[in-house]
Amino acid sequence: MVSTRGRYGTHMPSTPYKITSGPAGHWTVLDPEGIGMFVEREFRTPYEAFTALQGWAEANGMSAEITSGQGTSNQQVELKKRTRREPRWLPVTLTLNISPELDDLLDNMADEMGVPKGEAILKAIGLLKIALDAKREGKGIGILDDALDLEQEITI
Image (cartoon, rainbow, N blue to C red):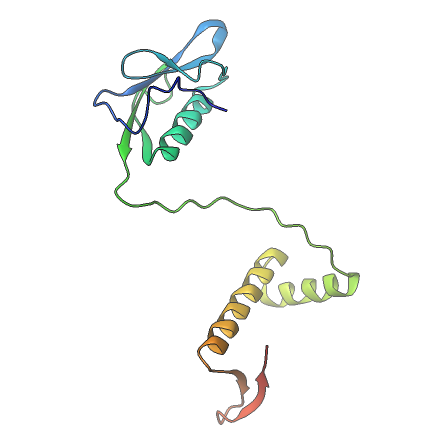
């Protein structure tokens, strides 16, 4: 749990926050008044300190941006209120247990498309979404021949 000693709601001072080198080679985040934030944490790099400040800012509806001193021992960071919710994309690791036969099939399909297995799975999910959306709208999905005649209807 990151403690900011309860003094920081969504108030955003006009002066920047600072990331400075502290004692014993650790890095510190200072608020605009020069008071240390995250005092229970020891940051080994300025990037770790910035990441903590960035996380705190996002939790309070703001974004953080290094405005000067990037790569030095005295970085200044400005926090800005977000006018709209910026999408966050965080990767999720998914583990699948599949049969060797299904793994071979997936390998063959991915090879045929010239993509990794993961991308083949993502394409399949995209197709399934299209099929479900069509079903919800009372439509169907099918395979057409060259004359645009329905060869096979795909049902879900």
